[in-house]
Length: 182
Image (cartoon, rainbow, N blue to C red; front, side, top):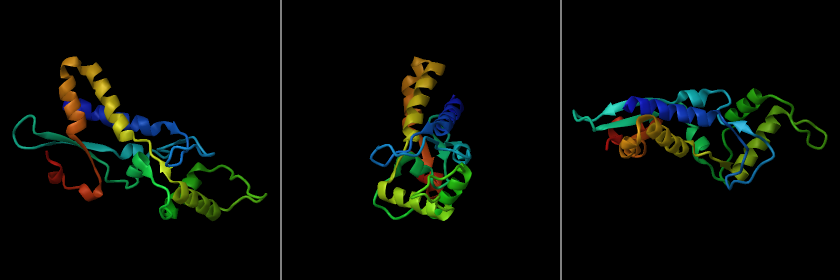
């Protein structure tokens, strides 16, 4: 049952990342660009892995550890990026522009170069920020609802504890699972 819930949680995260979202500033204002998928290449969506880690010999001494250490930008997609910070690294933005393709909007009758578009997008992100989609929280709520429907109301309390208290998303600087034990 724990494995089913972990797989359901990962599939919910992947489903949320596969949706298209309008481009918004950190404060939620719509921008002209978008909508975009948050996982345009599928790298982020497919990078989530889980491991069920047991603590001792007791059946209830476990955690579901969701390993998100592969790609370090997952938290920006999840929580967003506040305005007024320094420019983001240009390489990922340049790569994103190349993947998206399409013609750039002319500025004063001139089509900006790749470097100019990279600068303009970077400046917008630094100035306005990016609104996150909070897919971790949404995935937990949707997983709980689906798991209760799948396994029954009698497991509701256990499933809520499992999803909200015994599931951890770790990053590369938290690789030691020992520090995550309850």
